[in-house]
Length: 163
Image (tube, rainbow, N blue to C red; front, top):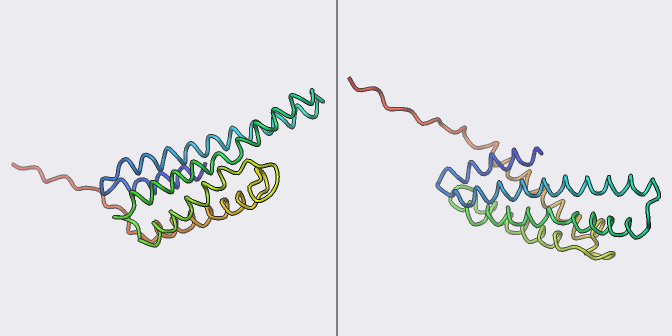
């Protein structure tokens, strides 16, 4: 949930020069990623509790497949958020961060389409998922570093009353 607050601050930076669509896309995508993550966790907990009660194997297989298909989905939302930063952040953010956002977007897209049962594109423990998670962590740290070094936003001053 902290990621949503982080995205809100980054979206405010994008919105300042009038990039409202990019800011909204960034915030909506990160919120979507967090919502699907929470949903995925809930389904996995439900599957675990059902398995302890020895439910039918067919139901457990279907529930496990549902949970496994939800697991990589947040990475697709992160890829969308990174694309929004690439397209909307050129005027406000450093050029190297736009490049990093593009790379993070591609890596997270690859993590988001990881639905195989084994190998590099395995859903739960494949290399693409691990790399996407690490790329997300680097992206968040880099953006946090940029935002930390920014001067505080100045509140607009109202004109003095005439009269």
